[in-house]
Image (cartoon, rainbow, N blue to C red; front, side, top):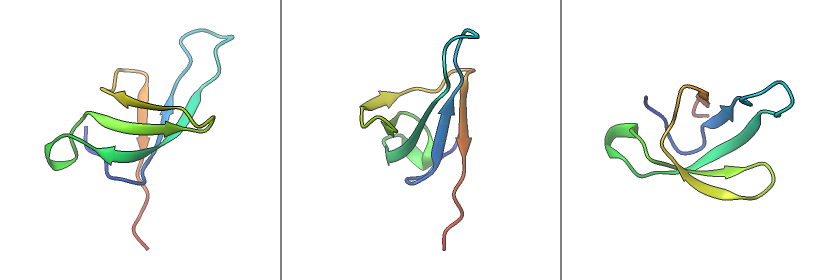
Length: 63
């Protein structure tokens, strides 16, 4: 998986009642866009993540 700073992430809820989590990649700590990623979630929490099967990256095009 490759990502860049500023890309958006979505982590799908694992159950019907669990909402999806949305965030932004603040820092890519792996080489060449590889994990781990420092992600800031919409509620303001930051976490270092290694993506799983429920993790999607929405690439943001440079302006």
